[in-house]
Amino acid sequence: MLSLENNQLKAVFSQHGAELQSLIDQKTQKQYLWQADPKFWGRHAPVLFPIVGRLKDDQYQLNGQTYHLKQHGFARDLDFTIVDQQADRLTFSLHDSAATRGIYPFAFDLQISYQLTANHLTVTYRVKNPTKSKMLFSIGGHPAFTVPLANDESFDDYLVEFQPVGNYQKIPLVGNYTDSAAAQTDRMAGIKLSHETFKNDALIYQLKQKTVLELTTSAHQHGVLLDLPATDYVGIWSPYPAKAPFVCLEPWWGLADDRQATGNFTQKTGLHQLTSQQEFAAKYTISIF
Figure 1: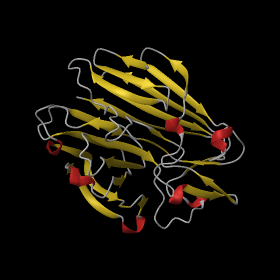
Figure 2: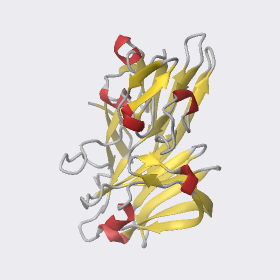
Figure 3: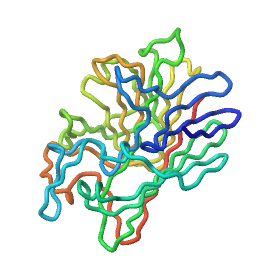
């Protein structure tokens, strides 16, 4: 295990999936990150690449060939290389291989960096296309946060607040797939949580401006801030009907297949495209209080 720490925060990581595995307040020793109890969900904060969500029948077509790719892609299940390690920063790297090209026929350079500053952990994704051909991909985060954070609280004491308050397009899920035709605009200030909130799976919102999500109680005694400066979508999820003691706040640059998707990868909703030698960069910041 690898770690970054200062007098406010300690973050622990694994090379497997370049995954954040622990986020502890140094003063209170409170653990903010879900500890991957397999009874509910055996992950902490996986990286979603080269797709977000699920493909229809876990497959897609590209250049006359059919490829099979499971939900959220393969990066979360591969070992990364450490390319930079400093007192306040850690960078992991993953490249394509014969195995990845068999299910995703693109060359890629993926870097995931973690920067610790005070009570903030900034996560940065960099995707580079090293070839002369265009590259198609999505990427996203899936951090899960402990709810409740105190023994005298319940899951229902928590809410997710949106800043700024305003109109956000909500994209519903039908089974594993999005239903863009049924998307509607909701005026969002906050979501009062209960396990029933997730009876239809994740809540998905399109973001068109800098957005901050705050996961906290009505008393605002402690919680998590997720700062999303330029994120395409956010998913909010907890497994139902399991009554799991965590909530995921997920910044996405991509979406699951639409229920009307044809399987043609070039037409997939939410994909990003890179031309030769072009690089994509995106980031988000987790803050605790």
